Image (cartoon, rainbow, N blue to C red):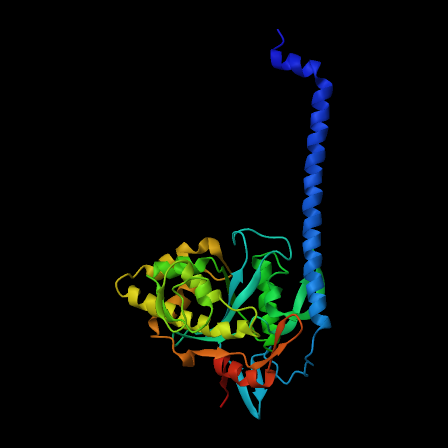
Length: 355
């Protein structure tokens, strides 16, 4: 005997058909709305870029940097050879929503708010850090909403990440842009981490002690008052590393001092706790796997970390900053690297003089 359910469906076949058509229409509408939203958001991004170009007030000078694309560089009558024992590692702190394990649509992968090129000396087991302003103007690869490459244009360096897929492709665009900015310097490895990983790492080492040097940070947390020495806990660490007053010109440049202080304090905390906890460094990386994208094998990035921990305290002499000039446009801060002044820094970090 025919069941009640089948009988009801037979008697109300037209109603079922109308419901099915309605559901399909609703799904199609949602899909179209999502596509339109992505398209509109993308157009907003393109409009902002166009507006920035229109308001540009800085005349870009011809490159005065020698080429670093080869093993040998000639500079001021001397020859330098790339030190094969020193590896270049581009580290990126990514401001994005969503998990770093997920690929994204072009334009939604986040931006590289913190940029550091590490020079790892694999013989001396030391590291030095070259800090790169996120607002550096340089050629980056542009893509459309489908990820098709449109060619290169001079934009803010940190946007190069957004034009990728939020993972490997974004990292590769960043590596390519930084390499070209540095005269073709070969960058062997990259590591990108979501800024949401900062509190996780911070608390794993028992907090990082810093002195607050920026006014206004107390608006984000009442304990972060200028002049106070604080052991950062939880979200305080992310606030300290990321905070800047967007109403102050070149606040992203000034924020690099906070980031340098935090990096030094973090490694001090790691060194302190590693004395009694030999598994700390391994555990730190295990904790942030979901926040991280890298082309390095585990043993490679663990060696970098071990070198940093074992080399003693990171001092101010271990930090370098890309020299250049900050320019304020009607809508954006822009930074233009001084290629001539940058050349001896790259030679010091990655090359050795040929006798």
